[in-house]
Length: 101
Image (cartoon, rainbow, N blue to C red; front, top):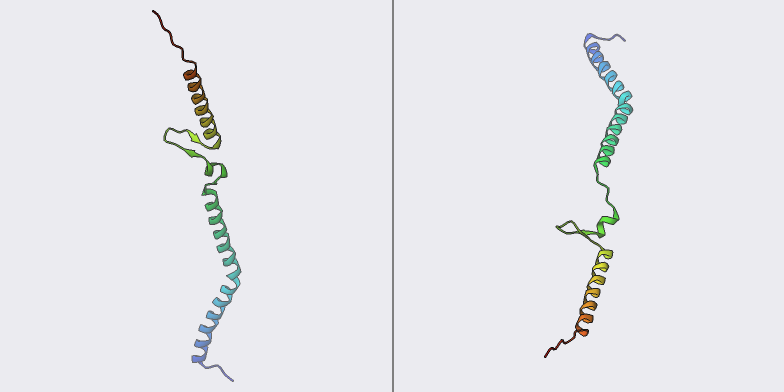
């Protein structure tokens, strides 16, 4: 069976297409590996830019003057107010009358 010139042209075209397809299939794992490496690099860069949050800052409040108000600060202020109130009561009970004639 002889190959006619028309068949030869079709076969040459099909042979080059097949060769390209085989080369593409051979490179598929390499391309997939490169894409995976790019995705991992982007993920790593994103993680490096992300700000880490701590539990300590979630509970502290900062006013405009820059003073923090947490449970210890609040308790200290309450004790200070109680002490001031106690001192005022003592001064009120110790008032003396100075009467001169």
